[in-house]
Structure formats: structure tokens, C-alpha cells
Length: 316
Image (cartoon, rainbow, N blue to C red):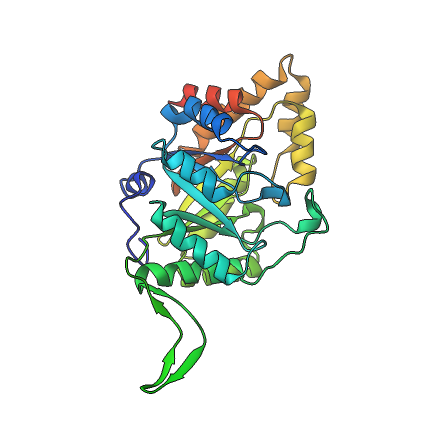
């Protein structure tokens, strides 16, 4: 199904390979000097999930380091999907973090570009963007398959011209993903970018939050038409909305998030919008579980832990 063997050390990967639907929760590390709050939150979800998906400065905002958050959760027996952005570090820093991630026993990586700094809480910060996400995927892939820290430069020595690539004494075993946007499916630029990522070593995609089930169906059809369903595991993101206002905010402010007007109207008409949001999410997750080609469902936590727990409890 994929162009190199995924790491079976990851419980999440083993479930993918067994054809089981996986459940993950995406969290943004809190603005805190302690991991206690985050650990308490995840402990409530742990019975229902296969891994925690940790963002990396999502929205160009400050929080606990993604790798520190991952280490804390890993020490508490939680499998990790670690997002790594190309905004905040140059290639040296990113490669250091890839090796450090492997040393922590973390295998599942999502490479993302990262939001522009001017969208976050420090708009004067300078974005690095030394690498593109497909280049980060390629580097992690070469670390895994060739056991090297790749370099595109050469050095001259007594023995001749040699690459500056360095061997890795204990190569990492990465399972490599990226974030995709279902609304772009069918566009030639979208197809080219996704094929480029697959050629670089991509093994799974996680979609931006999508609440339009007809769009998800079309997205899966496009992946099949592009010959990508045999190359990629597909994880679709969703989340319970707590009100019509919150759903409108997501629709208008989160790039690529698709929420149909009828969903917003249901929330607006509900006596208890939070309860209705759980019901809508539950219905959509159950439909997602019936769709051929979906390997997992990712629920995005945005100060909405109780609703996510209710959805997962109902599903499980």
C-alpha cells in the first residue's frame, strides 16, 4: 500500500495496518509552565483514543513546546502524532528536532508549513520558512530509509569529493503525514502538491476540519481518481461545535474548514446548542466510519474537551 514500511513500533500504525478505524484528538499545548493541566485533560480521553495529535505553534501563537508536550505525554504511555512546522526554524533546527523526536520514541510526524506570524499573537515575529513541508517530509524519509542526515552540498577531501550527508548511528523510523484540505481536491495545483509529497515519502494525510460529508465523499473519490488511495492512509478531522456563533467563526476564520449552512442553522435552532453540537459530531463520525478509504478520525480540541469526550464515549 505504501512505498516504504511504516514503523510498527507505533500502536497507531499497527491499527492502520490492521484496517481498524483509529481515533485521535488534536490538542494545542497550553500557555503554561506546567504540563499538569494538559496531562489531566488527556487522561480523560485516553480510554477512547489511539494517539494524541500535538500542534506546533498553531495559529502562530505561543504555548508549551510541542516536543516537550510530546515527551510528557509519551512518559504517560500516550502514542503521539507530532506536528512540525517550517515557520519557526531553519533546516538545522528541524533536523535536530527530528532526531530528538526519534530519541523520545515518537514515530508519527505531520509536516506543515505553519501559519504566517502576522496572524498570531506576535505579528512582528519573523517567519523562517527555510524548508517547504514536502522538503521536510523528504528529509525525514531519507533519515528513515537511508539512515543519513541528508545534505545537498559537497566537500573536498584527500579521498576526493564527498557529500556532506552524515550517517545516523541509529536511524529513526518515521511515519510521515501532512495536512490536506478536501475543498481543494480536483484542482491541478492540489494534485501536483500531493503527488510531490507522496514522491517525497508521504504515507498519510490528515484533513483540515470538514463538516460537509458530501465534500468528504468527493474528496475520497478524487484521491482514488489520482491513484492515491493505495499510497496513503486518510484521516478526516471533525469536532463538536458549541454554538452557531462558534461554527460561524470557524467557517470564516479557519482556512479550509468547511461547515454547511444547515449545520449552523441546526445549532442556531437548538434549545441546547452544545448538546446539539455533540449530536451532529456523533452523526458525522458514524458516517465517516462507513466511508471506504478512511483510516482514522481526528477530533480537534479547542476548549471543548467535555463535548469531545461525550462523542468518543458514544462511539466507543
